Structures are given as structure tokens and as C-alpha cells.
Length: 376
Image (cartoon, rainbow, N blue to C red; front, side, top):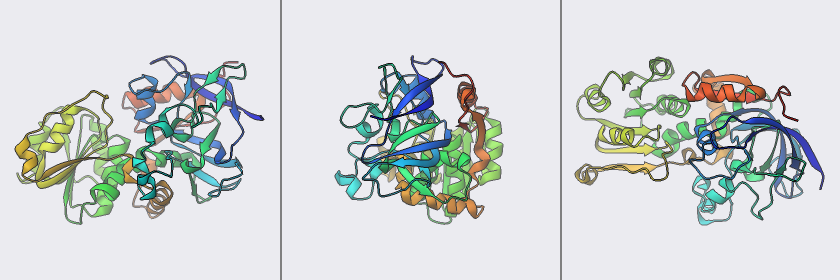
């Protein structure tokens, strides 16, 4: 079978830096799309997989917030044609009851579509050209490379006149935060919300809460620089969790009653408990932060019985081919300036981009293709 020579950042060992290598990428099969990558966001999920806190076989090419230009398509592809500009998002089976009901983020085959490291038939899309299998198909794409082979259901066509180099994060982190508010919690105008953790996901939630018409938007974080930015993007008040008791302070700011909605974006169980405890009665706490698989929390039963609820939210409850164009429209209108979160790095700077993300020096790192520093 004909293959495409690519440059990819390969995760070979748990917790180790990624290595730029030459690799071979399969030609598109019936429902696959070959995309020339213009930029890929770095997401927390990439890092927990690199560190093997979430299962995914190594060696692997990660990356699941890609954007680029369609080069070739499989014979059965109907959504896009060569030359189309696209964002790559999560994969789904399209056939289960949840997919058929229009909630692909809760696909019953979500794990196998996004985390197996191979196609449904067990074949790999990637190799090193010397018969070594490299695991791909991460979130239906594996876009830490200059080309990605994506599942058709991961591909979202976008207008050609928007800058591709900033669009990739719409595929996961940005749509997760914005969708958690606009699609899942759906706060009515005049309601109140507290967002715990204002990284890229939480900051997107803050912007979405402003769009929704929330009159009080409280941002909670440990980093003063993030809190300062949150104030420029829609937060009405901030709480520094290092200097203040977040539960007491959110309650004080909300007049003692608590907030109508809260969103937990950190994956830290203690923070989730705080996000629940600041709710008014009734109130709803959304959970988007990915915690370790064995993480648990303790909740007061009366606190639930009186009308408070917790709901988990995957990928912002979004249908990507509908929601991503909507976010682009909001961005064009100046209502959703997610580009302010982004800093660009060359692909050969990917480990620097990861370090800056981990250390909180940047909200959303986006890597762009570069031929420098390849391991031959």
C-alpha cells in the first residue's frame, strides 16, 4: 500500500520527551482523510497519556487538536474534498444509540474509537518505515505531525478565510469549556456561575458564560496571571485559591446563597468538592476535569437531596460539525476571542511547548510543522 512520508513527534517512553522522527503514514482507506497539518493544540489529555495515567499503547503519535488542509480522501468520504480547510476533533462510531441520538461525545465505543491506538480492525496507520508499529488514531487523528490520517467523523469543514494556525484547539479544549456552558449547563440570562480552574478550558467557559448572559461569573484559580486574564475575558470577580478560602469567598461574593452553576476544570477531587459546595439550592455542578481513574470524592447526602446536582460533561456535549462552526462565528463577531489564549511553537519546539503548558506559562500551546531537529 502506498504510504505518506511524514515528520512526527513520537512518545516512546512513559513521561519522556517526545522525539521528532521520520515515519510512514498509510494512504486513506474508505472513510479516512489525509490532512496536511497547519497547527495542533496541546491538551492536558495528551500529557496524561504521555505519562500513562490514561491507557494508550506506546510508541505513539499523540495530538488531538489538529487543523489543516485536506490532501486526499477515501472513496467513501462525503464530508470533505481535497483543498477543504478542516478542524480535527474526537472520533465516534456513528452507529450506536447515542450517536444516532445526536450525542456523539457519549458514543458507546468512545474508548475504542479514540484510545486503542489503531483502526477498528487492529491495523495501525503508522510505522517507522522499518516494520516497527507506531500507534496512531489518537482521537481519530494523531496530529503531532505534519500530516495526519483522520477518521471522517473526526473532520469538521471550516471556512477557508479563517487562520488555520489558531483553529486546532476548537477540536477539544476550547469546545469542551465553551460547550460545557452553552450546550450542557445552559445557564439562563441573569444566572450566576463559578468556574474552578481557568486554564484554556476554564477560560473558554468564562467567555461562554458571558455569551450566555450570566450576570455573575466568578473565576477561581491559583495563578494570579490567569485570574487577571479572566477579568478581561468576562469574569466579574476572581478568587485566588492560594490566598483565599474558595468556598467561603464564592459564597460571600454571591451574597451567601451560592451560585446557580459551577464548573470544575482541574480534575482535582478536592476542587470538585469545593465546586459542589458553592452551589445554591437548587444548583448544578458540571465536571470536565480529567482525574486519575481511581479518584473518588465524598459528598454530603443532604447537599444532594436538597436539589443540588453534579453532571459529567465530555467534549462540551458538542456535535463538532455543528458547534465548531458556531464558535468560529462567535469569534468573528468578537464575542469569543479564544485566539488570546494561544501561543505558537514550531514542531521541533514541542517539548518546550509542553513544559510551558505544564508550568502554566501559557494557556494554550499550538505547535506548527517544522523540519528542524528530526531523528533520522
